[in-house]
Length: 309
Image (tube, rainbow, N blue to C red):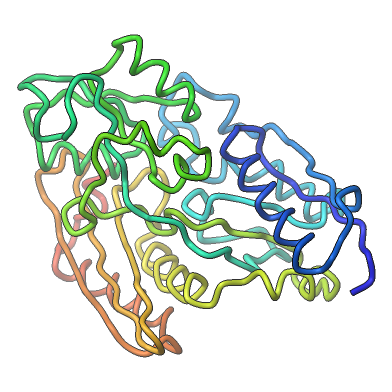
């Protein structure tokens, strides 16, 4: 393929940069592009700048994408690299998630200051997390624990943990592996007991709909099984109107031409949770996710969603 000049938009955190460089490497290796033909453009988002409040109070997931998507829409960049779990289910007009790199380990990792497992924490211990899903799951498993909001990138959260601000925290295993920091993990949580966020562990690439040049460059990078799984998980999330204001978990797994899905919705205090499973052909990935959402809503009963607010 003819050498092309590409601009990749990304947030500036170490993890976001690691994901952008992974995308750049795959583009170079796949198409034989020279290093200087691909530029990584670092952008600051509102989600990065606002660190003193929970995301649920200031706008949810779109805070991590708006500035980058504006640059993508007006042509200042050619594609954007995101953590899939940060992506809203409704994208700006003219943009789509055109490729997903192969998913890393989707599990949550517990990092304890003095203990190895969440269940080993003493009564009344303090755990830091900014995720409403993780907060609800922690409270479900250990209602005696104090959960505090814990914003910041991976390095910031680990520093706060080391300083003793909390007794433990949670991070995505995938992010720690991409940063070469897997050694800090105390415990990997069983996804049947502590299910991950929809999209967790997958890198999403966003581009302009109808941009044939970019579509051709990205097509070989798109991992089929990951794309199918994320289609199901994002359909589940979309039906539930999922955002950073809602404790929702979901994980799809692909085996050949079949897909299995498990999902959960919780109240923020972890006191009530409803689980759902679904399976079928990969061709029906979106329908499986939507159907699972319909069934778990019926199971939870009227008023469950409004109890979150």
